[in-house]
Length: 202
Length: 157
Image (cartoon, rainbow over all chains, first blue to last red; front, top):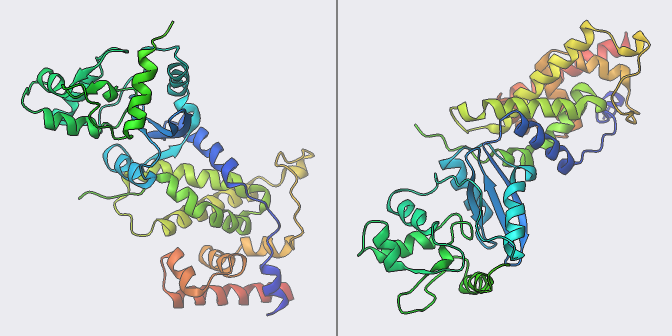
């Protein structure tokens, strides 16, 4: 190797902190309106959730164990591929989740972006979003109110694939027999949420 | 036709590090981070309108090189602030590099400049350089050797 080639290997030292640099990029891009889906992790009593927001509102709340790549791929396909980690955009949701888990909040006041949900599932989840804190309903009643009394199985599927659990409170829907039914985040979590809400708030 | 584009942040995670190094070669250590920000901001602006996702890395390289060229041109038009008696605002970065040599590299034609930096700074093979520049392995080799010849001539004179 010649001296020239050796010199060409050294353009000068420059440390590069990718995390810090990409935080700056996400802030600049958000300010310029170039981030269509912003996300951030949230440490909850139910494990680390991932919050996704768009300019319309909360679009997805993911439990741990749901593969991150699948979440991102779905959002990229349905909403926009301009997805970045931008924690400050999720602040309002995080604050309300803090209050909810502390037993200090009964209703979420965040706009919901329903674009990941379509058709009958959207009707079911909109009905579900109106079940008040501390109350429960049944798959059959939710199906009926969504317009198809006999479609309780389809209602169950819609609730099972709720993209915004906790905030759209699918945990408040139980079997008519009184059984817990199912829960995408696992029955442990459903029990935890029902228990949290049965103690009410001051 | 529906284009499946990966989530943009994956482009950051996968390529920002390498592109930073590329830009250190093209514009110097002090300006590389800002130039990389400009690169990704431009990419983000254009991203939803991309018509295919075949070679996103080459696309980013093209933008980075354009941003680097803009920066170098701006500097030539408006000579260094040191001459105006004003200190540059960039943080002091240790630059033990051979500044005269790098000024010559930055004056090379675009393709030669990019190929030289990828060959020596990034230590890439010619087929890898070709993939990043959207040219053949042979063309990548040509660009490196032509650039080297020119640099040798200039260094000798």
